Length: 579
Ligand code: PEP
Ligand code: MG
Image (tube, rainbow, N blue to C red; front, side, top):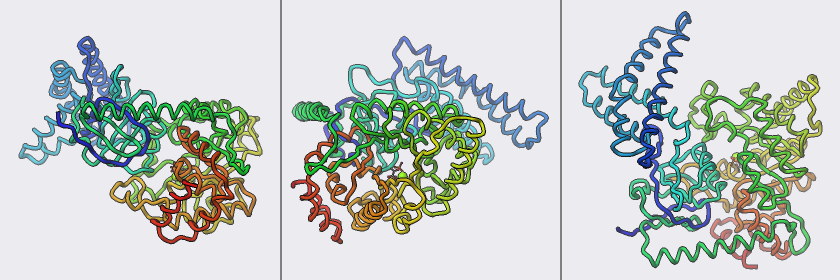
């Protein structure tokens, strides 16, 4: 077996050694895995059930139509889909594939869809040729049913680590992995601060993105080493390389164990500056890791993840339960719930009726803009958060604010939510603090409105960098231009921290920069005393805080603030870390 290496961008550190598991992408990304001999019949039944469910779904649509004012073409379209679904080439052939190849139902169906689409492409009649789109639609319906059921993701091999290799993964895909134990994952595309990378980090497994063609070059079950720090992937390593990396793995583990001793130590610099280290979470189950790593609060609860991977929208009670679980789990430590940041790369299936395809989603109806455009959805969330505020120390954080009118509208909506709860006699914390995310350069340049109307601020550097440098954070073609050390970013950070300090308003950084131990001293030097990051980074950042003397880094950070060249800034930051 040939040994070779691929270089990508490491987005989540650590070393994993394991076997590749390829995730195929047909019309949807579907997993491919082997079914144990004794489970083949059950897999065939799972497929048959999914087909039956879709039949039921189509029947339901038919019934709903009768008597309704549904256009006639819709009926014809349903008939075509019904016929396709009942044709043995779609409903029976995959069963044979499952049996013969001992593969999962999704994979069998995707393969068969590929064969059918190819056959249709050969047809001369244009009308019939176009029916291939219907085959794909019917196939996708069945796939969705299958993928919503256990078995949708490859079951990781018990005794060996499984490394997922995909062309691309959406944040919604990655969040599903929280329930599985993968050793690492690799994708062909992706940027360092894309939400996919952020969620990967939160899984606490090594991850490398932007490998360009890992999906094509790596075969199922090949042995891989993934180095999430350097972004290197070694395929079919020889023995010497394997033992070298096993040694590194042990060293890293030892380091991790040592850091654990810092868990309950307060984060104070050598010269006595206290620093708050909070955690960023996506789901209530992240609490365990948050507490294990000694976070003194939750600085960012990305609540929109409650929306992903589900058919309907979470109602007020369901949201309330999720927020209350976090609030209670954290005792009286602050829990900062960010209102939904949907749009751009985070779209929920349940929003189908509300969302539309924007020409430029990152600049479109995202985050607070989306919430203000959908007041019912926003009010439901605000009521749920307020209700949870009765059970802990809850704060509300609003993403992507750009103007004072958005602040005013948000506060008015909050007032409305409070009023409705008061009328119903539902308890909530009437003093709940409201903060704004600083993610758009305009928010820093005209920060007065933020300072006068909000209780606290949190800088989302991931978006602040994206919008300041006009670099799409999820697009690896421009990833080389995405630079946290660009002089404009350093100056905006210094300005925001300075203005908030003067106004006596608490300010945090909750973007990925906060968890970069290499940047801890720079941020401390710029005056930051409140960091929020993925729990896995908390202890190493704390260690850096404990070994920093703010007075000693002052002169160098002042030079960094004045520097105009990114390379020079990078060199000065390196020096800062050797002090
Ligand atoms: C940010 O933009 O820095 C941030 C913390 O929010 P998100 O990454 O979820 O956009
Ligand atoms: Mg953001």
